[in-house]
Image 1 (cartoon, helix red, strand yellow):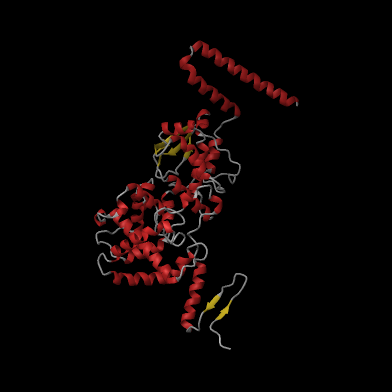
Image 2 (image 1 turned 135 degrees about the vertical axis):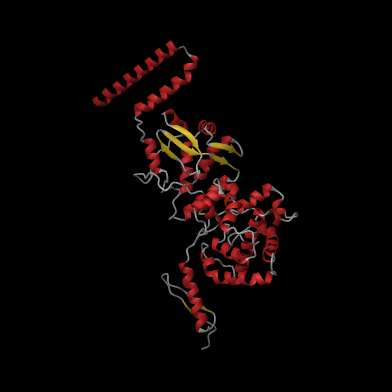
Length: 443
């Protein structure tokens, strides 16, 4: 009996082979090797987990201007950028040579990398091979040309609409930080190394990327490059995540796993005698405690911080092996800022330097960032245990609160009256403590 094709499937997690027609042994070997290689490539670009979505949260996770990669490819409200992508691709490939001489090696290398690229995305990508390669090449060339024009102003065209409006450009930049709107970093590096770049421009693609995202990164690019290697980044969002890493090689280790931790607000810490001070640091995550002082790096609150942090948190959630640095920082800030009193304290101490929007919204900002996130690895666990164990008994807490109230009202009351009042309050406190002791002992 004549068969158009043969199929063999194995259950229980075995590899399924589909052969549409009889292939030469060499082609069949290549096909099998590609399938096996795809299984060995780790997934790095995820969908945002459902549990992180709250009402209206899609505005922080979905692109508004441009689609990158397969997840939002072809959505109607993003199609207007496709022609702009083709303009950028043409400008990049034909800058020094004819576009055809560069196009062929770009397509060839992407064809070779296709199994690895597809494996980078969560789930099965149903886009046909040629269309998939076309999409990846177009998106990669668009990003590279955009970064070049941003860094080298001489490459910009006067009629380029992407650079006309700062607000629209900020939205575009924000779209490139979304977890679901990424292509693998190794693709960008491969294409960047193939396309013609001006001979005087010898920067790596990592440096080019860091310069593009500089408004979102609180550390100097040169310092970051001296301290970290970004060549092995998974994608652009992962590159940004690495730029936020704390500079401390070691932090105090906690004794527990962080469950049931009690975080006191900044104003409460101040009331019990622990000072809160701003500090200039290499990373905003370089929070430390010592000698009764909690040092917190200054933070600029920009308009796109919420979207950026939400996507960084989502990425940490999807990578179980990663330390939850950003998530830990947000949980720490949520514990420190519970009221407008704490917000005012942070502005007075220059911990918050600037704020886009209303200051009253900052309390809710950190609550919203935590959302439905579970934190199993609290980076600041050891530091917080030191903070809470800083010789503060129940009596000391009461004494420091009383002493602070004394300092606040002493300007408006005579010294004699205040001294008598203070003594009476102390005696009452001692009496209550003694009575409580005997009553507890009796029962």
